[in-house]
Image (cartoon, rainbow, N blue to C red; front, side):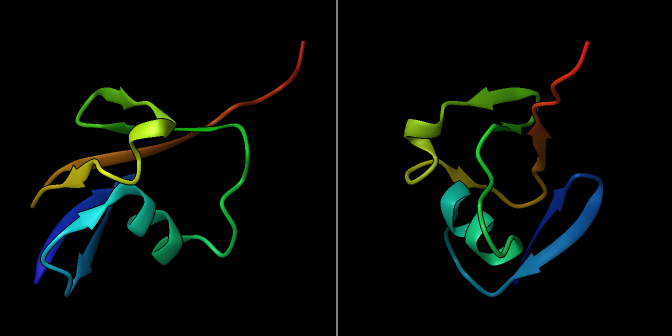
Length: 69
C-alpha cells in the first residue's frame, strides 16, 4: 500500500507504480483542460504525466487556471 498527499489529503493506492496519468484517472471523472500538476514543488510538463512516477509520501498539487481580471 502506497500513500501520497493530493492537494493536502492523504490518498492510498494498492498499485506498486503510479504515474501522474494513473492518479488523475483514479481521482477525477474527467481530466479538465487548463490544469497543471506539481509534484514536490516542481511543475511536471503534461507530456511527462504518463511516465512520471509518484513516490511514497510525495505531495501532489492539481493547479487549476483561473480566468479573470
